[in-house]
Image (cartoon, rainbow, N blue to C red; front, side, top):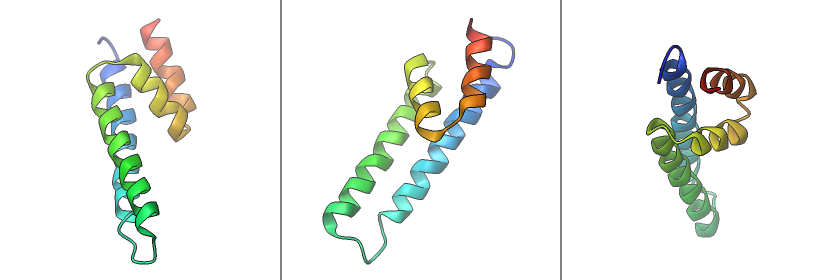
Length: 83
């Protein structure tokens, strides 16, 4: 990675991990059905795993996270640095 790319990827990974933590916390609400709590936990786990892939320089993971989290500006910055 060159230039600002590490900073851009770090911001995306941080946003994904923050979202995962929020989702994981939401899965512990007492009023949730076990099915819903399990689905939220699985979603959280997927965000954590994809954040790890993005951190390991997987461009598809970066694009997926930006898409899911609405990080259009960061994705544009990422694409500008990569191409």
